[in-house]
Image 1 (cartoon, rainbow over the protein chains, first blue to last red):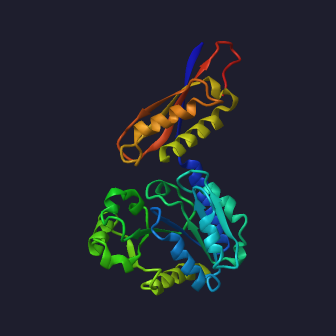
Image 2 (cartoon, chains in turn green, yellow):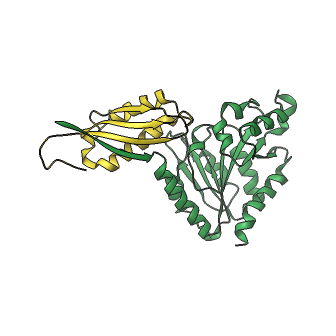
Image 3 (spheres, one colour):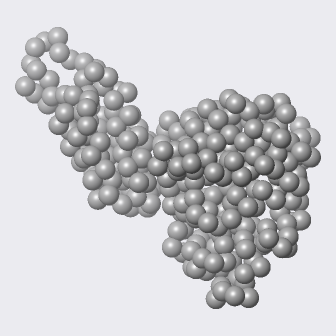
Length: 223
Length: 89
């Protein structure tokens, strides 16, 4: 018996990145903008999406892919607010979505009737950061009930993001959260981050969030 | 869990290269950059778990940690019997 060594040098994420590029190209062909919505569990992704679908679901032709470790509870909650299919991905315990899952999910979505695809990732501030899903914008929700040093503890998520949405701002009077300090911490790990502040409960900041979504869709719609 | 999903992807990648010969794989070299965001000992643990399941038989992970954010499979070793026709892949 002899042992042979075979050189490979292949990036572990190469296949996912190829699939993500294919998803991106397919969405571009149909003029669909895609947002990858990420956060820790309980930051308010589903509540924000409920309000979003109720307000903009039809005007912006929004389709949703909702990922969860177990159950399709989030997808069921969202389906109440839209006449369209909310595509659930149950990862079976996996801590993030990958491009193959999204590629499969959009097979069930009428892309010609879609201008904005929102991908609700699994609640987790670590793993989803590493997986390109073919999105155009990466949005991290950062809730005021978390520590304002979260960006320093989980830098990769914030390094890779385009936007940070500070959620549950109606709770600011009741929690020791330094809003300006939190934004400084975000900018320390990624100086290009842009911010929104919202409360899906009171509606504060929601118009700015809706404007962001309209602007995200607009450049592709004009193509 | 993060490292486990990546370990599974490494297993898939090598299986794709080796096909039915994966059972003869005795070692897999992986570079895990110091800025990759991965915990090498956790990844090693997960790879050992992946390599303990069929179709794997006796492979062991060999991790190195160069500077930077590189994360790649760099090599693997397979055991050949010494018959002349046995030179796959």
